[in-house]
Image (tube, rainbow, N blue to C red; front, top):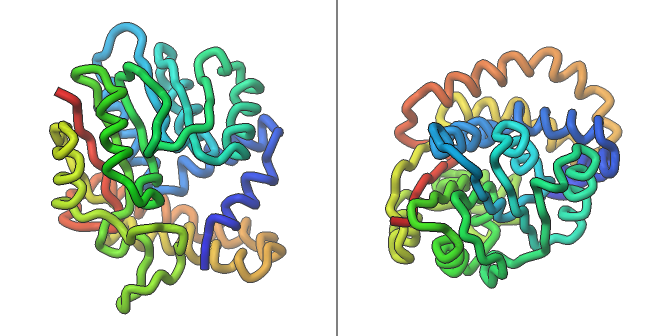
Length: 270
């Protein structure tokens, strides 16, 4: 099953609506454990920074991370790019409604042929690189547009089942990825080959997080893929299981995971 169509349906339901989109973004930040790791990584990069900060949101999607970052850090100016014009139009409309259109700009761009010039203090890439065949070309562009001392944060599935592949290697839930995930050695090699210095690599979605993913995302998505009308029972489902999922997320991010199905990489340009 491909879960992008289900995700896109939710995006379409809130399109052009300010408060529904804000609620939708808040739910994404709460439910998806990767957002917890990304927020922590952004804080580690911005901590103690003075003056204005420029960020490239490389593959912004719905734009939730651009919105969260701009709201959390008033000195940040963000350029958000994506290859999908529909996503960008939705994100741009919401930024206008939120009064952030002077701080967040948007353009259609291909990360393997990136037109943005920078220089940026941070390049953020969340759940994007697993969709890009020519990933090393994208990494080279990230390095190019960063200032000296600037950082890149990449959140991506790992090769430990991050694309929900079966034991036989067949994708069972997420079928839109060009690779099943990155190993630590692979992503380290690819980033350092273009000049980056690795600062930190963290596994997410360990034992606790993987269970939280199944309870809060996978099982409801599978249900909705059968019939969107089944969404009527989701409030009752989450009334029971949401507290458990949030506790599991907290346990995961507070643990030192030796392995996991997600990777968060922080690196910098010397």
